[in-house]
Length: 118
Image (cartoon, rainbow, N blue to C red; front, side, top):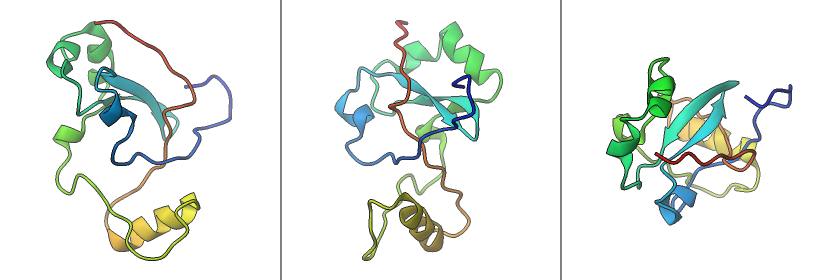
């Protein structure tokens, strides 16, 4: 995605994320396992408009759309217990221990950005 070998920066999505605070952000392109994915904002008021664009179709045609509304429950995972929440690996290990059977991938939305008007 970035054109170099740096890989994705690790971070977490959480309640009151930028998507929640900025519902005018319709989607973001994120790197997941070294591949670009279109992450839809579940709080966007223009989701139906976005899904009719060529931009959306580009990602949908290759199965690269992440839509939380399509994920089976649970849609949120809560870290319980006394752990260092600033330690990403400790948080991910705790999530894996508390929710066996799920794969947790850490990502950020601050590395690169773009705005697409639909």
